[in-house]
Amino acid sequence: MSKFVKGIIAMIFFYIFNMFMTIIGQVIFFGDSFTLSYHLFTYTGLMTLCGVIVVCTCIIIEKLNEIKNLYNRVDIENNTKINE
Image (cartoon, rainbow, N blue to C red; front, side):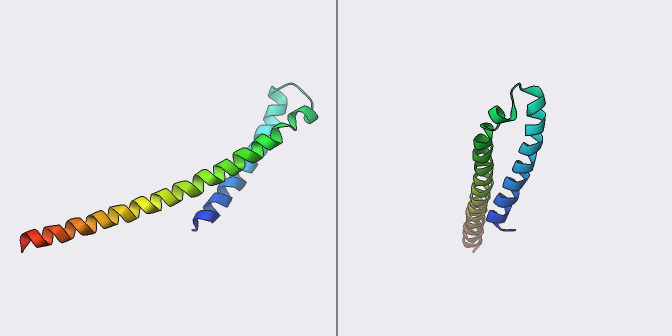
């Protein structure tokens, strides 16, 4: 699965989660829906941040796996030179 697809899925999941939290938030927090609508910008920013975190984490994990594979390959080459 592509990194960007994972990010989009995470953003959609976070959006759905925030919609349920908005319903719960209207019960917990006092105020009308107009006052609570100011938080939609915060939710949008959090959704974007969630997607960025997922994509960046996937990129970092991919790069770390490349470094690990390179290190293992160099280690194997050094062990074969020592054994010769």
